[in-house]
Image (cartoon, rainbow over all chains, first blue to last red):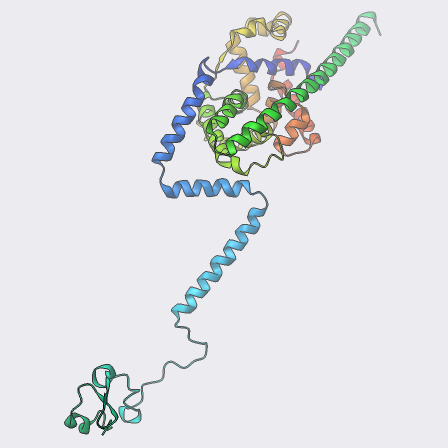
Length: 151
Length: 226
C-alpha cells in the first residue's frame, strides 16, 4: 500500500472538490419538494410498479421463492378459469349427439317447449289435479306433441 | 549501501511506519465515532419508521454531504449526482420500514447509494457530460498539496483546475468497482472492513481491488510522481 503513497496523496486532493456552498443547505428542501411533485404527477400504476420494484429488491434471496409461488398461483388460477369456460365437461363426455326426434321424448323434457308458458300448474280443488294456468279442454286434448296432460 | 541510500531507506521505512500508525489511529478514531453515530442514528431511524418525517430529514441532512462525495466522484457530474442523490434518499425512505437494524443505517444507506450509482453508470450513455465541482480554495493550504507542489514540477506548473482534470480522468479510467473502493478508502477515509460490508465482498477482495486500482492510478499519474 505504501508503494502508492504519492498516488494516494494525489487522489486524496479530490476531496477539495465541493458543490456550491449552499447546495447542502438547500438539498433537503429540494428533496421534499421533488417528493411531493412526483407523488402528484405519477400515475398510480407507476407508483405501484415502483413500490413493487423497491419491495422485490429489498426482500433479497427470498424473492425467487415468492416469485415462484406467485407464478404457480397465476398458473393455477388460469387453469381453473380455463376449465370453467369449457363448461365443466369431463374429458371424454359426448356432447356432439343430435337431439332426439320430438316423439321420442317426453314433452316435459323437450327443450323446444316453453314449459313455463304452457304448463304452469294450478290446483283444481274440485278435481284434485294439477292443470296448466291457461287450461282449456281443446288445447289439452290436442296436447303437446300428442301427449295429453291432465284430465 | 551508501550513507545516502541508507538514510533514504530509513526515511522510507519511517514514513511507511508513520502511515501505518496513522491509518490505525484513524480507524480507531472512526470506530469510536461510528459507535456514537450509530446510536444516534438508531433513534432517528426508529422515529422515522414510526412516521416522524422530521427524523428522516435529520438523517438526510446528516448523510447527504457524505453520499454526495461518493456519488460525485463516481459519476464526475454534479447534475447526475444531484438527481441520483434525490433518488437514493427517496428509495431509502420507501425502504425504511423494512430496515431491521441488522447493519448500521450508515452502511445500509451507503449500500443503496453504491448499488444505485453502479446501476446508473451501466445505463448512462457515452455522451454524458462532465460537470465538475469547483475546487475549494482550502486546497492551497493543504499540507499534502503544498508538499506535492514543492516537490513535483508538473504540479507546480499546471494550475489547480488542470490537476483536478487530470486526477478526474485517471479516476474515470478505472472500472466502476475499483473506483468505488478508491473513493471510499482514499477520498472518504473508510476502513477496509466498512467498505467490505457496504459492497458485500470480503475484506481481501477490497484490498485486492485497492491494490490494482492504485497500481493503475500510478501508471496514469506517472508524470506527477517525484
